[in-house]
Image (cartoon, rainbow, N blue to C red):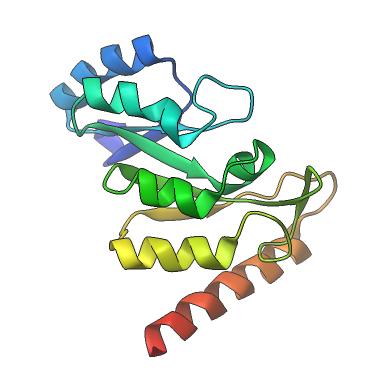
Length: 156
């Protein structure tokens, strides 16, 4: 990763793994962003607090809006609670547990984007749309939605 110029690696981890990764991240100058998943050890925002308290700033969070929504956690509130340690964002929206176009589901994508702007978030935003078949049309709609939200926010 270091040879490719990567500044953030994202993935799932346990608290023990995060502590071990912390040393490597410091050594190589690469951040590791732990992704939340429903049913995972990092399911809620509060699940991160002990690990983030025991590791350096090299360990942070990948917010997965869809997984927070699936686990009945508000993605916007999660972003507020995890402010300063958000290193990557997976934008995913869901309706009744199924993937949908961004902005049409329960993950509060517009509010999340606006909160990230308020925080001064400068990292990457990845659109996740895990469906069978060709996702191109849905991804284009999702990208258009995000672009419109961000353009509108820029004007205000």
